[in-house]
Image (cartoon, rainbow, N blue to C red):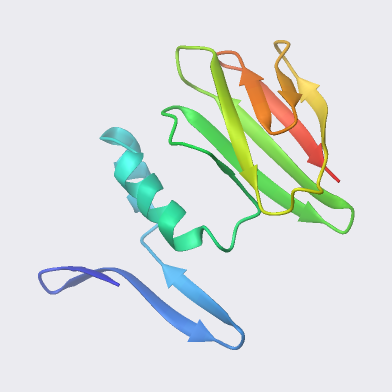
Amino acid sequence: MSKEGDKILATSAKFGKGEVIWVPSLLGTAARNESCKPLATWLMQVCKVKIPFQFSTFRKGLLMKTLKSDEGYLTIVVNKSKEKQVVDIERKDLKLIPSLLFANQGGTVSGSQVTISTEETLVIKWK
């Protein structure tokens, strides 16, 4: 998938009905020290068809984790930037309705749009 000289930087393999993509775990740490944008852009290209939620555009300092359960999804959104952010979350299943479970600084979710203050954490349930 990616090489630098004779060093393998990323690889992929088909396994059963799925596909495995391997990148070194320290790649994300190194990207944070420079710029996460190239890594984030690559991950969006590779994972786009596989992930249920993603930011509509790259936003420096905005992080999202997604958990799946039998009842739907939870997304945890954290704003580590120095500015309030307003961003759309793209979702594969447009029937999923967001419900804000937690916002420690008054953040909101309306449809697909999230408003989140600096150093704020949101927990959103999608059902």
